Length: 289
Image 1 (cartoon, rainbow, N blue to C red):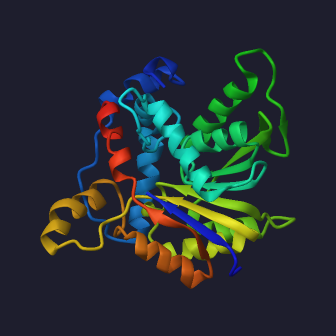
Image 2: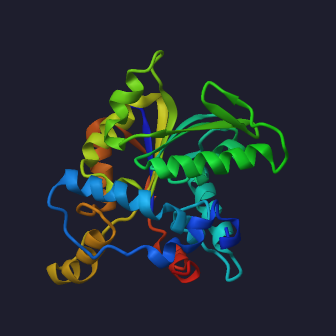
């Protein structure tokens, strides 16, 4: 798999799915920052977190639970969030109609975007059953277009535009075994992971699994949170450690760390890593907590 390239980058409340989500923010207690006692305990907390608060996140972020790429003062978060997807498509040169595994798909915003706007066949993967439920409901609504029509569903996929989507509840670290045991074996043109790998304790395992699930010449597309490579111990304790503990993350990596993991697995760099911290920082100003 040595020729596989890697690309690395860094709705209103009235549309909520049910009445419960409208008030969940009043009852959800944000967990206090806490270093995990083990990787297993960390995964349990991550799963519980998204089971509990995904409805609330949907009320804040809309269907895309990731940063927006802001270029003008008038950009809405929705415009900026889809622009980030478009940026990754541009840098990766992912061809239309590709088969994609969207790892850490959340409630399926990117999954649906790639199907609807790029004609892809996309499998969204998340550790949270609640996120799968939300993703399927939003997909059904999008496929029906507000009409009485039943969504076009075949072999577990729902048609969206020229593409199609499905969702799987699965720990991402088990994806290599899960998809390789399918008959026939499930391989993809692209493994896409946006702001989710930072949750995974074993980064090298993820790169190995991604490589095993890619067709020859397939691409791994990554956007994530990274730490700077030149942090002092004081900067780490003041700035990075609270993020790791508060956002349920194992130790944050640098972009160079990811490139190292990728090359060790046999990937070749297709597009050099680039820093978009400035362009995405406005996300935290426009998402009201």
